[in-house]
Amino acid sequence: MSRFISIGHARDATGLRMACLRKIPSPWTEAAKGIFHVKGLSCQYAAQTESDEHDAIAAWAGDSSIPVVAYENEPLRTGWAAILILAERLAPEPALIPADPQQRSQLFGLGYEICGELGFGWCLRLLMIKAGMDHSSEQTFPSSTSVMLAAKYGFNPSHVKLAESRVVEVLSLLDATLGEQDYFLGNCLSALDIYWATMANLLTPLPPSELPMSSYIRGIYTSTNAGMLDALTGRLREHQRRIYQTHLELPVPL
Image: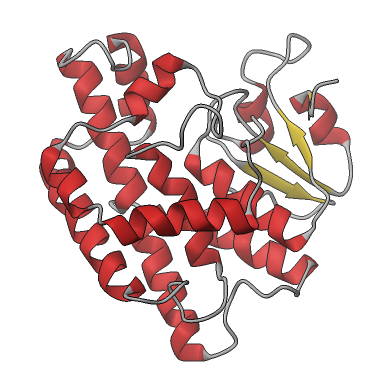
C-alpha cells in the first residue's frame, strides 16, 4: 500500500498533511519529514496521482513547489522556518529550536545559510539547472526541465556566478561551527542538524541501500566539483551519517 494519498484527498483532509514528490528526495521535503519523524508527529503524505488534475499542487497552494504543509484549516506553509515553527508548536518535545535566544538566533541564521535563498541547497540547485542548460554532462536535467526550473526559481546569472563560492563558504562555516561537537549547537540535536544531514544529499548522497532514488537523479545530485568536495570535511560527512543513523529513517522512505 502506498504511503501517499492524492493531492485532492490531502486538500480535503484534516490533521497534518504534506505534499511531496514521489521517489525524489527533495532535501527541503526530507528535512520536514525528518523533523516530523523526530517529534513523533503523524503526517499524511500526498503526491500527484492519476486522479489529480495536472496542476493540483499549484491549484491548492498557488505554486507548484514542494513541500506544502497543511494543518487543519490553518494557512498553508511552504517555507522551511514556518514548517519548523509549526512542528515545534504541535510537539514541543523533543525541542528542535533552542530555548536560549543566542542559540535560537544561531539556528535560524545557519538554517537560512543551508536552506534559504542563495544558501547551500539553493546554490547547488542553481548549479544543477545551469549544467542542464549548458549540456555540460550526461548527468544533468534535460534542457526543457532546466528551462522550466530556471523560470520557476528565478534563475539569475549573477547568482550563478556566486553559487560555487557560496557553497564553499557555507561548508566552511558549518565545519567551524561543528568543531569537535556531536551536534552543531552543542550536546543536543536541533533542527540545524537535520537540515544539514538532508541537504548534504545534494552534494554527496547517501548510498543506494540507504537512499533508494533512481540512478539518474543520483547522478544529478552527485557533485564532481573539486572545490566544493574539498570543503566538505570528514567531520561534516560523519555528522550527516550519524544524524541519519541515530535520529532519522533508514533506508529513507520515498
